[in-house]
Length: 632
Image (cartoon, rainbow, N blue to C red; front, side, top):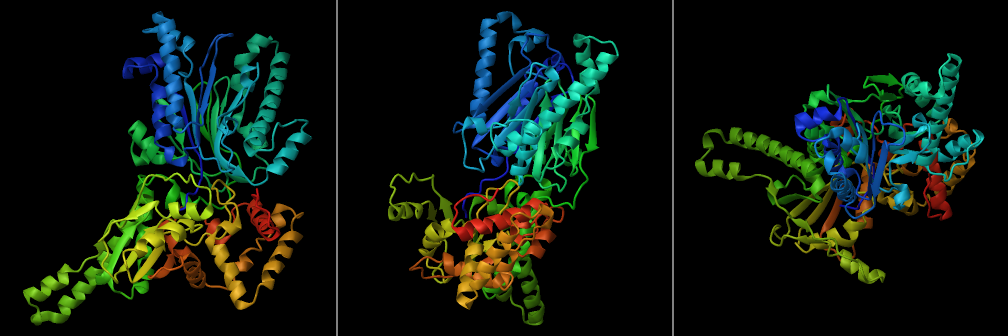
């Protein structure tokens, strides 16, 4: 409602299992893999529009022939820009080498990007950095084919400082303290080590250096490299990698925080962040696309052999529930039903807020992503009315007349498209008062959609900061002269930072946090805020496994209803005529609706990895000390 939340990235890996000639003959083009990657990235563009990247590897190229290619973009439409660049290179090659038009092997030799192994990435810049250097895939180059490494992922690590220190202890000199760099260099270190050891063994067997190359590729144990590399990782991740000679992997974190799905047939292996992307692009059924188990990797060897292997011992499954509420594409079969269920389960709270007066209540939603939960909410309203109608009809019995029956049946939920989002307005005036006036007009309303003194119920995916609500939406909705505005969040109150991929890093950004602070002031218990700060400070040098989330104590004295009531007060703009009530989904209902994705740390403070507790305490310390910076 909708304050923009930048969030997880999206990955896609494609491995063609047949020679390129096969796809030329069957599908009419040797660019089958590139075309499919374009579609995979477009079908996941909901996961990131700040930047995009693409990399490919060609198998069995001769020395001196280019076998790796990469292109990245931070243009306004980065996916389109990438594939425009690729298309331009293809057209240029056909112009420079006319003889390659019908010769796939010559195309492979002269045209970049058409390899058998492809990796795509769409990015949201969670750290506010959007230079091309921050865009995946990342590349670690070496003249030894096997030591080349391309990495892209959907992840955040909570312990970057520790990982950086590990690299320094190994004798490396990392160029920056970023989790992507540290993760890639850690994998690269153990890759280098494995190649050197295998070569040493091969040399003892009497092979020369040139003969050793294919043997190294065959003997390289990718799972072993991943186990050593990930030993100290703390975070949520779906990590994809390509090795220069043609091995590939995608590795998922032990708690299953970040989503990973795969599909395999005799032509292709594809791995992605979104199940429906695979279903649509490769025209396969729901049951054919599998979820990668937490702590496991799918490993594709250069010879095309595919196997799943456990890398780390799985933890309790804590797959991100925000994926189901908001981030993932709603076209997923399960997610669609879960979002409808979220709307259905919150309806009893809505009914209470409007005193059961459905006849004088209008239902709507903002933004469009909330439409599915809206459908569930309306369905539950219909179920409620149907039950009431049955009771009325039975009660009237023989006294029923056609007029009374018509009157009973005529009652139904009133549904309107109340708010419409205009094109994004440019805030070219810098003064705050003028900017606020412009923000007020981001949304427009459908005049006449609500009768004077009606209740107006608006459902959203989540209410995080509440800024747009206060500065724009509530003011605009009040113009319709409703008696009461009920704002419904299909998600529970967001109280804690996320440190595994979502850009929710600072406690003071959360309206629920601000509400808890206000409640402490109201009750004269502000001293507890300092006590929490001192407890957090005391744990700064403790091991992650010993750290406790003391920020929970801020919320403990208050019920969820008390915090919601205070949030409504905070977000109600001056001069508004309508009464405002804000309703949040309950934690129990969230788990009922999304039973497979129980990761709820941003709502409950129950972090799935030890590093999460350290991050939330650091976030509280930053807040208390007035430091406007991230906690990880």
